[in-house]
Image 1 (tube, helix red, strand yellow):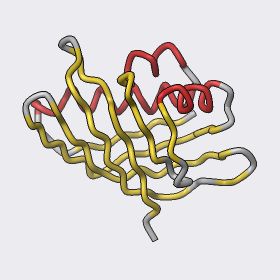
Image 2 (tube, rainbow, N blue to C red):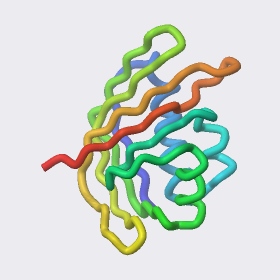
Image 3 (cartoon, helix red, strand yellow):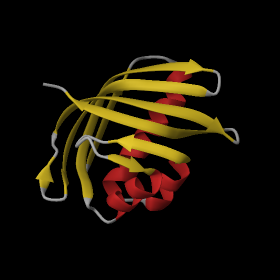
Length: 131
C-alpha cells in the first residue's frame, strides 16, 4: 500500500490535507469504521469508473475489496472554504481494480465537505479521467 499526498501550502488548509490522507488510507485498507467517521450520512460518490454510489455502497465496496485501491498519489490540491462548506480540488493517480477491471490512472477530482457537529465530513466526491 502506498499513500503519497502533495498539497499547496497553507496552514489553514491542514485539516483538509489530513482528511484527504485519512480517506486515502481508509479506502486502501478497507477500513469501514474510519470511512463511517469521514463520510457524511448523505455522502455520494461518482467514482473513477463513473458509477454513482451512496455512502453505504462506497463503504461496502471498499470493505469487501470489490473496489480496491492499492496506491494513491494526490497532487495540486486547492481548498476553498465557504463557511460550513469546503471544496477540495486536485489530481489523484491511483492503482486499483473495480471488479476485474483495471481503473488505474490519473484523475481530476472534487470532494465537498460540510461541518456536522463541529467535524468536517465528506458529502460528495467526483473523479474524471485525465487524458
